[in-house]
Each structure stands twice: as C-alpha cells, then as structure tokens.
Length: 372
Image 1 (cartoon, rainbow, N blue to C red):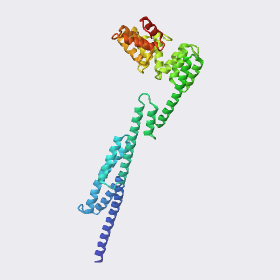
Image 2 (image 1 turned 90 degrees about the vertical axis):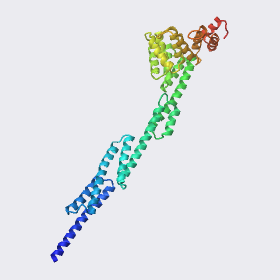
Image 3 (image 1 turned 180 degrees about the vertical axis):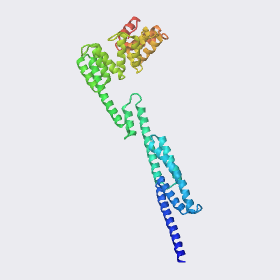
Image 4 (image 1 turned 120 degrees about the vertical axis):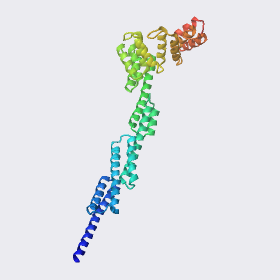
C-alpha cells in the first residue's frame, strides 16, 4: 500500500513539475510577445507545448489548445514583423514609411500590447513628417530659384524654414545681392564718369565694381577697351570681356557681341551669329538689341528682309524711349513700311527722338518742314 502511495505521489509531483516548466515557458513567451520579440516568444511557446507533449497531455486539454493558438498567432506576427522591419530599414521615402507603419499597425491589431510596434509607428510618423518638411523646403527653394532670385524671396525662404536645408545658401544669396547692389552703384558712378569723358576714373570704378561682382561693369570695361578710353585700345580684350558678361546673362554684353559680328569688329563678319546674339539680348528687353534686330530685318541681314518684323522690333525699342529706335520707327510710319502709313505718328516720334538730341531726327523734321 505504501508503494502505491509513493507511486501516486511521484506521478503527481512529476505532473506538477512538468506543468510548472510549461508555465515558465509560457510566462517567458508572454513577456517576449508583448515586447514584440516574436521569434523568441515563438521559441518559448513551442517549448511549452513540447513539455506537454512529452507527458502525453491530450490536445483537448485547455492549456494545450491555448498554447497551440498562441503559436499560430505568434507565427503570423513573426512574418508581419519581418516585413515591417524590412520596409522600415530600407525606407527612403514617404510611401515606404507608410507601408512600414501599416504593417506595424497590422501587428498591433493582433497584439495591442506590442510596445516595439508602437515605438516603430511613432518613428514612422516622425520620419514622414520630416520627409514632408524636406519636400516642402525643397519645393519652395526650387520655386524661388526659377529665374533671377530676389532678396525678398530669399528672406521669405528663411522666414518659412529658419532651419531649412538651404538656409546658408539663402543667406549667401542675400549677401551677394546686397554686395551686387553696392557694386552696381559703383558701376553707375563709373558710367557717369565715362559719359563726361573722365575715362581714367571711369575705368577705376569699373574695376572696383568688377571686384565686387558687377556683371554690368565687366561689359563697361569691355566698352573702354573697344573705344580705347582710359585703357589702350584692345579689341580682343573687349570681346573677351563682352563674352564674359554675356555668359552671365548680361544683355548689353550680348548685344555688343552681336554688334561685333554685324560689323566684323575683332571677328569675321557673320550676320547669322549677330542675329543670334541680338535675339538673346532682345529677349531680355534690351532696347539696343531690339533696334538692331529691326535694322537687320530692314536690310535683310542674317534674316529674310521684312519691314513688318522690322517695325515690330522698332516699336519694342521705341517704347523704352530709345531715340534711335524712335527715329527708325518714325521713318516706317512716315513711309508706311511694314504697316499703315501714319505721318502724324511719325512726326511725334521724330520729335521725341530730336528732344533727346538725336541729330538724324532733327534733320528729318527739317526736311518735312516741321519743328522739334
């Protein structure tokens, strides 16, 4: 009888020990599961099930079926976590972070206690906000960099994105514009000196302005070399300076290159090349180039002769109060070249040009018996 009791006690103890081991694995599995460490949790759950299987516990047993359910659920989480982590770790755009976030949310739908997935969702949200901010930053920057950026546009960018990607470039742009403004003021001083034939002083101002970044002054110095004023005449140096200014978008430099090709100054005469440069400058509203295009259309130089086109370009230049263009347009109006004859309009234009000192306009008025 004592042996029977002893056997029963051993069996009960053995079963309780086995059950205890199974519970330990379960508890460890639950802890890992709620941390989002699903692979390790799965190992623990399978170990718990193995303990029960070693004791031939029936699959109908509540603990047995519960562990099986946990294993199925955890296996699903393992696969989802692998996908979510892959999306997250390779994400480099908003769409991929949204995919990662969505997958972590699927895991949370299975396990609402998953602290790891909650942290990763927050991290995805932060990355998405950051990328949207960067996209807005770059969008504004690209917009203000279209064309010639103003100081106000740079300031707008800094105001909207004080810690933006391009803040240093914006500040540099503001400094450049401010310095260029000072440089162009010095250029204008040089231009005034040039106009009163104080050539040496004009050249000094042009050189000073160039040092400060004035593109206009580069062209101005080129004119000095072309004319031999304040420096020894040097056509090659003049052309070099015109090209340097033109390459930076200066319309006067572009027009001067066109003039050189039109007249064969320092280069072989090339009307087609002249037209190319006049068009570049005229597209920027340069009145001299617009008038030169009108002249080329009048004579058929580098283009098919067309008074209609000539008149169009003279009108553009005359509207900017350029005396030579006013005179040329007046001739078109007076003789009916390229459009209706308009003698009254012609006389008005002759007078406008004459009052600016244009001698040919004065002569034209005298020839038709009109005062200016």
